[in-house]
Image 1: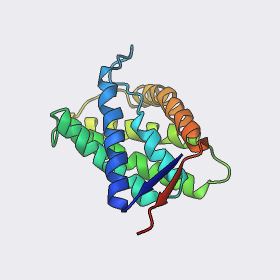
Image 2 (image 1 turned 120 degrees about the vertical axis):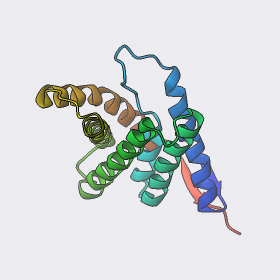
Image 3 (image 1 turned 90 degrees about the vertical axis):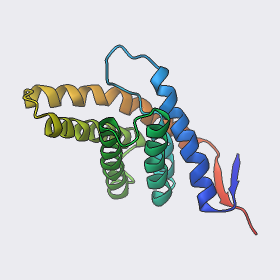
Image 4 (image 1 turned 180 degrees about the vertical axis):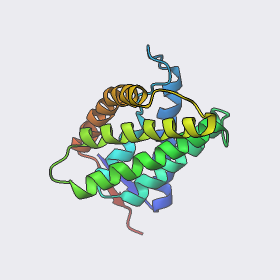
Length: 173
């Protein structure tokens, strides 16, 4: 399958819209554990990281947070700030892990590390804003465990996308 685009802006807009749609659809997926999300939108970000389109992946990641915040009516609120900080830290952890260990690490491991980074960023912001007195060791352990399953699922989806015959080519003018 070929995906042709005229400008990079067009490609970023299309895939940001797709990632935002996946993020918003996750609202309707009810998981047995509160505050845990699957993170399907990260599969698209991982797809572009695996294709060495790092700037495109970063733009899609940031735009989907803003679009998701707008359509969920949480733009510039605390949940939006938590999501933006988690998405940013998660992206840079995934990018560094992929760039340094490209040959030895799978997208599943990269996705799992990103999911853990996302949730840890949100936990640290929560403790900063609300000065909570949770037991650090237990809370972080639970956060890491709850991050791994969605991270693995998202990584598997990204691996499947990466193995498909999808060509992203610039349309000649």
